[in-house]
Image (cartoon, rainbow, N blue to C red):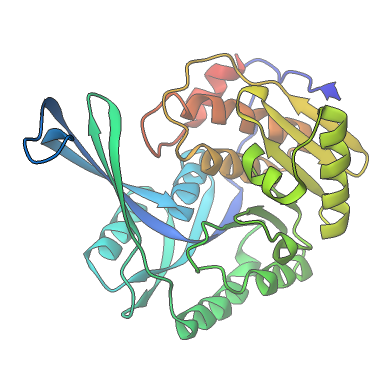
Length: 319
């Protein structure tokens, strides 16, 4: 594998013309922060006195806000429940300058992940989720087709919550329209992602599909075989402390990890795929796009919870 050439200091293309359509499972990330000073007399668990709370967009909504933070024009298409959490997500996306089309499904509750944080450590996470109904998903597919002409790149963010039941059809429609399609995959069946431009599994996710590899050469062989079988242009594997590896038909290259303290990896994959998509939509090549996405991922893991990386932070990192 060859190392990527470092980007010119402080240089980042104009990303304001990049148009993205983000589709997938959205959720509301809630955080309860408090002080822990004693153990409960009822059970051997800490008692958290909640002092403040925060709400942030999660899942595909976090992908969309990351792309918007870089200056891109972003549309988010998803399904939420007819409830307070769904309203909150819509409000948050408006604040993030994301155009959102959140289809209401009265039969479900909006997915919520509640995290309890004590002394800057996550003590507990509680999930509330329900799969959306078939009728709402069909309506979303119809709108997806109508929105395609308005975008350059499509991101399909699969969190396994049921919002991408028609992902194979979406990939086919987008590719037929000449759009690049980036997929953040979930589960061990990748056949549904066939025909996409690139998929972006992390190291653990890829192992579920291709098995354990012995070394980089073995990884390249397994990744290359999977890329060919699925008809992908590329396969990007995020490898934590080992950086990222991109596999193309003409070869592969690796981006080393940035040496910094990891605070929280939640949402890092969202930042990576959002940055990669924005760079590709702006006309950058694979190497430059992966380089900047790697920098963005390295920055966001130094922040608590689902967070974004600004254009200014990336320019500073390039410098």
